[in-house]
Image 1 (cartoon, rainbow, N blue to C red):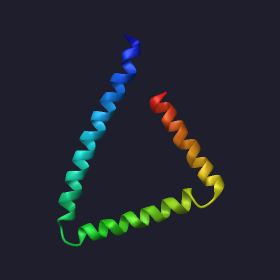
Image 2: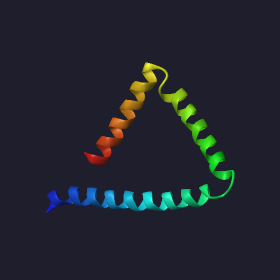
Image 3: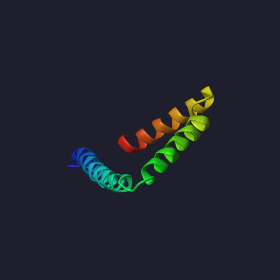
Length: 79
């Protein structure tokens, strides 16, 4: 019975992710329909990408640290 726990949990996580995606997509569509707000949010997103790149991707040591954090998260999540 314990062997069924992991596939059921993964199925639940997949369904939850799809529901969250649908909710976020609906909210994003509603916000995008407001004039200027959609463009402002795009600008904020581009700024966030620039900050992420500067902090995590420019130096090799930062990239290795990011890869290690991702691998740790994957191991904790999926075993």
